[in-house]
Length: 101
Image 1 (tube, rainbow, N blue to C red):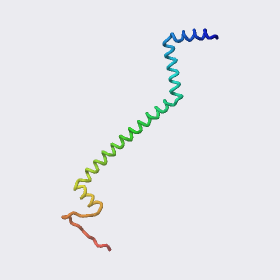
Image 2: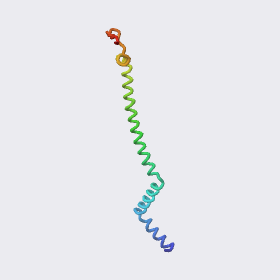
Image 3: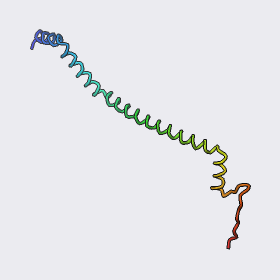
Image 4: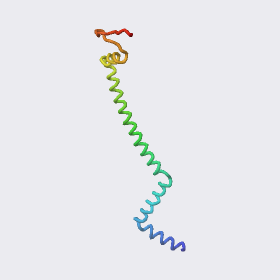
């Protein structure tokens, strides 16, 4: 094939915009896949989903801990915990002491 035949064939190809656009899309797609950008983009999308799930979990934990903190500031809760965990009695409570045998 001579240079003039090649030039004529190339000119015919370039005069068909749909074929040129398809060729450009194929070259672009192959370039993206071979370059690794597509895989990196997929990895970033996966990381984004994982981080959003962690953020949601952290927000739920913060909400739960805020509720517990609010409850712990209540004097009735503190008194109840002291009675239950430390075996303390209130000021007007009746306490029975049984001797050990």
